[in-house]
Image 1 (tube, one colour):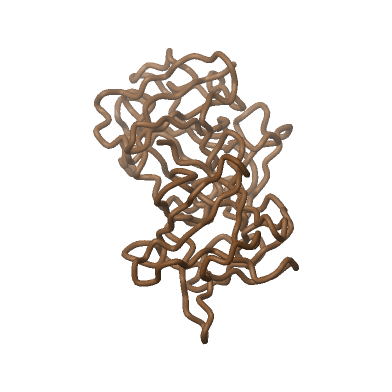
Image 2 (cartoon, one colour):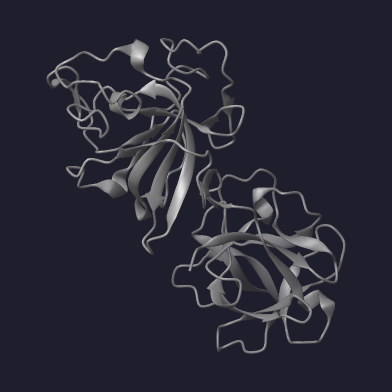
Length: 324
């Protein structure tokens, strides 16, 4: 079953389940969970493997953290804590097709009959675990977010192509480390793309709170090997910058451990020169004729900014779509 991102809205309060904080890029143990007006921020986006049954309700900011039970005085408070090995993190979601509402019950058998409960309807109201009382403060709307998941708070993984058509670039069979598909450049041109690009002074480069660089449409500026956009590049030739299609839109197609495909929307802003001989996979050797050496980590996509890549190794790169 495909992992999806959701917002979770309390029926009684008409406010969203929220991690306290603003523009968070990391999480800390026992950060409080509250209700806030819907604001479409990552603090209100949750990753679930299913909207019913036994699941972890994980934050899109960092999927290692999820909802948790934590005793504060006499209150079974709800906060954020790592889910690994945590018996107080898994829940059972029961959905009512009649009302389109759900109840969220703590699965830990040591604490039976505890349901996710809002303590009121004001912004900043705490959320806790309590016995079933039949109140709307224990009922929730769980709503799937549109057409993408968010990995590590910043990387959007779309369920479909982001542009129609395109040509296919297959990943060479010699790449035995397809789960090492990514790397980052750490903003080498200080908020710009490669200075050799004809469009360098006309394109938009935005910097996100995680250090990711995006264009005006939210696509990620990346470096790719020369053969991604210029299939005629030969291994015994120097890279011809004039044939690199800077500004070309790409979808990097990656696959998770369940065999589900996702599309990462990118745009060409730099060239990976150390991809000899196929011009796609980082070999540590440059054009022409394997001169020079560098990191041979087998990456295919380098994000031009600096961003957290935790969990990216759970995906493998399968191909790239190049759009004109």
